[in-house]
Image (cartoon, rainbow, N blue to C red; front, side):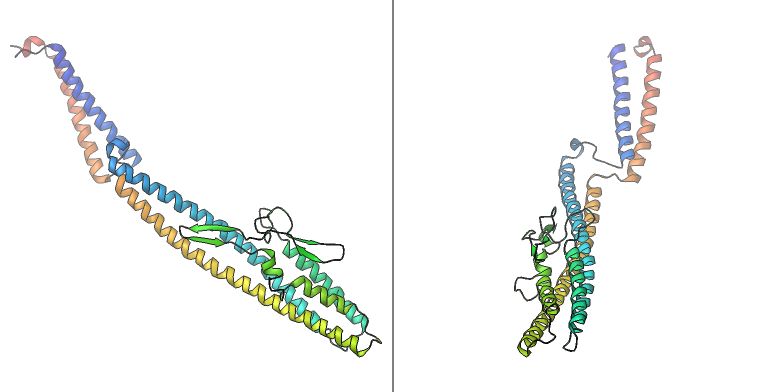
Length: 309
């Protein structure tokens, strides 16, 4: 059978081209540590890898949501610690207003309570690191508590606490609206109302007053004292709720970390190379390519006459 020069050249060139293509692809796999460079390399593995990447993207979103929730709850806890301190001080101060105090002493106590009321109002209107009002619910851009001309404090914030989906099956409120902390729905733990009652009673002159007036005044002070105690219990309950939720966040973070590691391993099993085997293949392909080059060059140096003798 007689061979033409063009056929010999084409065969030699095809061997070099195929060898170079395989060698180059293996080199890319080594450089990227990825076996599946294109979906066509392994359609099933590529399809599964897409699903794993989507699952991991969702896991990352939950991780970010938990960070947001954690930051929000920690900000509120910090404020509530100061609220407890102020409430404790107010309760202690009010207890000192016993029946033996004269009007001047009672006025001094009332002034002290006014200062604590102002402090608590500032705490109720606290903002987080982003300038958002902590106790305003979804109305984060305006003060949740306002004071009218008479000094009465009212809540004008949102009615629903901000919530975050912190995992696939868990939606969590990341804090409290102001009414839940400073004046609960039952009305027995209204901080500002209790303070107003106490201040009004203490600023009422009792020197020379009738026993009935004094008795009514004492009842008002006692009611205010009870209201402050209830408020302290209410705030402590809010602290406990946040503490439990922060523990849950830690647990979900741990689960999320494990899930991320599992996704990473699954993805590696699907598309990553076997380093030892791939290096071995790379070296063999390199030798094969060098042999193809040499054979092609040698073939070019052989005359058609010599091939057909």
